[in-house]
Length: 397
Ligand code: RM4
Ligand code: MN
Ligand code: MN
Image (cartoon, rainbow, N blue to C red; front, side, top):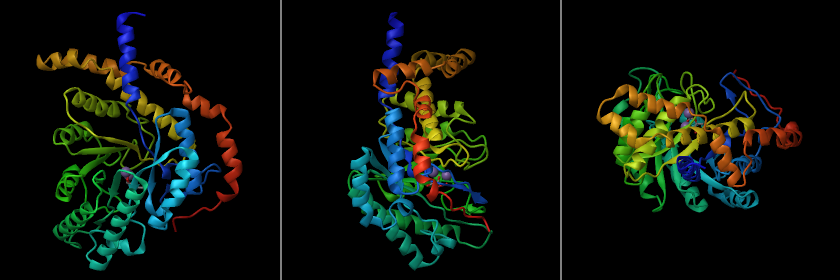
C-alpha cells in the first residue's frame, strides 16, 4: 500500500472511530402529517419496542449507542418510569440519550408553556422541566434538549417582551437544578406551530437564552429549523467561535421542519457543516457536540430510513474529514478562489463508501448496514409481532 493510501486510511479510521450519533425514540413510532397518520406494521408501539429497534440500528451500524427520549411519549409517569427504562437499557445494551421535555401537547399549553401569560401554567411547565432534569440525573444522561413550541399567531395579541422575561426566568431556575455534568440545549425554530412569532425563533435568541440560563447551557441547531437558503454552517461557525454550540438535530428539509432523511435534499449542506467542525477542531477549539437525529419517517420504512440516515451521516462526516485543510488554508490566504473551491468540492465528490466499508469490516460490523438490514428478517418479524397493535389511525378533524 502506498504511503499516502495508508495515511488516508489512518485518517478515515480516526474520523469514523470518533463519530457517534444519537437516534430518536420517536423515529420508530407511527407519525404522520397534521392531516393524518399512516401506520406501519413494524412501527414500535411501546418504549420496549423503541429500544429494540434502536439496539438493532446500533448492532448494524455500531455508532448509535444512545436513544433520545421524549418525556411524555416515553416516560408518561415521569421519574417513576426510570426503572423501566433502566431495565430496557440492560436488556438491549443501549443507553438513554438526551431527555426531551414535552411542553407542547397538554391542553394547558394552548397559549404557550414557559411563556404562557398565566403564572400557574408557567409553573406547571417549569415543573415539567425540573422533572425532566431529574429523569436525566436518574438515567445518567447528560443533555436536556429543550424545544419550546411557544409563540403567537396574531400581531398584538401577546407581549413579546414579557414572554422573553418569563422564559429567561424559567431557564435560570432550571439551570440551578442541573447536576455538574448536565447541560440544557436550547433549540430554536422560526415557525410552527406558531406562525406570527415564536418565542425562540433563531440562533441569536437561543444564544441569549442559553447564556442567560448559565454556564451549562448551549445552543442546539436543528438543521430543519431554518428559512430557505439560510447559511447554517455560518451559524455553526459562530456558535463554535463563541463556545455556544451544544449539538445538532439532523434531518433534511425542502421547506422547513419536514424531517426528511439527512442529506436527501442537500447533502452538500451537511458536508459544509461538518467541514466547519473539522476545521475548528484542527484549529484547537474545544468542542463538545452532541450529534443527534431528529426525524420521524412516515413514508419510508422506519428501520431502513434510520439506518440510511446513520450511514449518510458517517459518509458526509468522512468526506469533510478528508478535506486537505492545510492546502485549503493556503488557498484561502492567497485568495485563490478556484483552487480552494475545487479542493473543497473535490472532497465532497469523492466516493467514500468503500472507505467506510473497510472501516466497518475492521470493526466487525456489516460492510453495508442497509443491505444487512434488508437481507435480515428483522422488519418482517417485527411486522408480524406488532401488526395487530398498529391499526389505530387518527384523523385531522
Ligand atoms: C420539533 C423539534 C423538536 C422535536 C419535536 C418533535 O419540531 O424539532 O426537537 O422534539 O419537533
Ligand atoms: Mn428538533
Ligand atoms: Mn423539528
